[in-house]
Length: 222
Image 1 (spheres, one colour):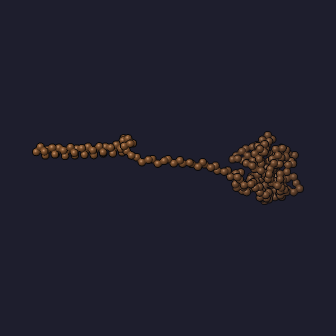
Image 2 (tube, rainbow, N blue to C red):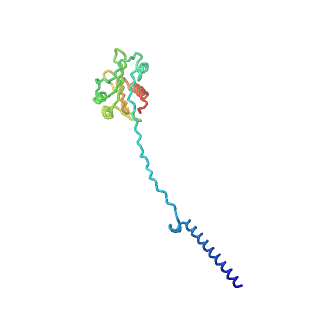
Image 3 (cartoon, rainbow, N blue to C red):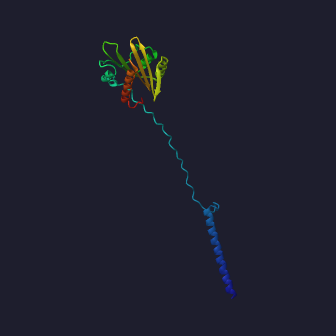
């Protein structure tokens, strides 16, 4: 009887030891998963080496170069039918030149801008054998010449206003030959000068010329 009891106690101790060992193993596994076991106890795979990524530097977008300035012909900027409707039914085209004449200008800044222009168109309409007529000059102009011309015209009594990048300078006065009006448009590198017998005439001629230049130069912001 005593021998049987001792045998049973031995079996119970072995079962207890196995249970304790199993519990300890389970605890190690739990601690390892929780990160509580020293790295020497839990093996880990080496972390992958970091890869250096070099981002390409942004490239600047080149500013598009506008196409060369095109100045339409006189009959395109102001057809003869339009000239007659604005002035007289007897109006005729009297001049079409690729340069602005320097005579007749009282302000040296006007002559300087005309001299420095690389492209120009000068148009004249009027009634033959009379003093009645009007003119239109369209040229390119540098920023310096434009600034000097604007300052000189304002000092001479012209009224100026700038709207949407377009500077308008106007003056109407009485002379020995009657009423005389001048309209100047400055926008970008473009200069339009219309001279006639009234501001209504000079403004209408300058507007038609500006519309024609804009149509002929779609890549330019006039």
